[in-house]
Image 1 (tube, rainbow, N blue to C red):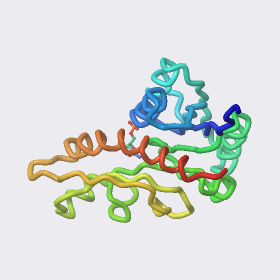
Image 2: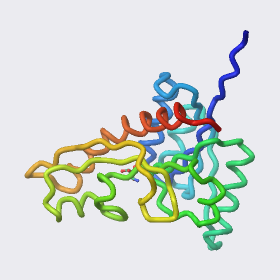
Image 3: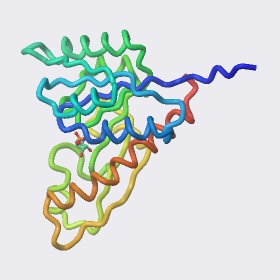
Length: 197
Ligand code: GRF
């Protein structure tokens, strides 16, 4: 009997460096995310360094800039591209724009984000600075479903990272980023394992 196990097509949205996208693509290639393939990388910034890194890995890339359009219009073009590429799961990886409620509703429970704090602590901008200012002994990273709230959707996976006395925003960010790169692949694997779509 032939197996017809579904392959989940991942679409990754980036705006910049793309190190989480690279980590996810490499994890998929190495078989650490069973049942997944990275089918498309979309950047809203033509200058995003991650675009070249995706192409080096043979992943199709698209640049969809906002060009002064409304958020809704921009998101509609992104949604169209995702549908044309039959994307099952959308992974935000350093995508620096808020998504419209229309987009979130269209892909409900299929959009994931990674954030460098232990949510619900320190959502939004400058989470590392927020953690240092709060004087916490540990922070970390979170992969969560995206809903209409800012970094507030249901949590899929988290990893804790110590905050050291001499930490700066940069040193803490670097230590957390190492864990982000492992966590995103684990979280996507968990989502696929428990999915029935
Ligand atoms: C990561 O820290 C991610 O958690 C946050 O933005 C940063 C993106 O980095 N959302 P990269 O583009 O994946 O290197």
